[in-house]
Length: 190
Image (cartoon, rainbow, N blue to C red; front, side, top):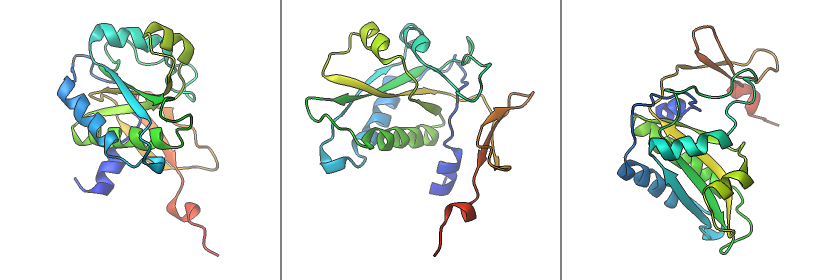
């Protein structure tokens, strides 16, 4: 798969085959991609927690919000939930500022997941204080993002934006439609 295909296939998947387990070696190889990614001032202030058992994943799930535009959807139902989570932490003993490092790391992980036949979703809507307590995360770490990972079971359709509506939506067959602005609209030439 070339780079453009890899990027095109790297979508925000929110429904997974919950019977498909992701092993430690695969998750650690994804985190290694984040480790090798650029970091502002090369400070490398990110750390990672990962969970890939059903019991661990069940503990994390209630602290996440899943799709802001799908207001009547509370998230994946039993059988369609992620089978692994990677929590990206900012280590405040290294830096108080994390810039865009966690976004770069998250996307590197998702690209690697796609390349491995997996998918995921970057989640920023997190009950951080409650989850920090639930997982006994030390005070010198801030939860920055969570990546939900698994074997995707949903079909995502990229389409042109109609008007100004950027909201993704689902059709009656559970296809997930994602409107994208045209390249012409994005490029500004004087």
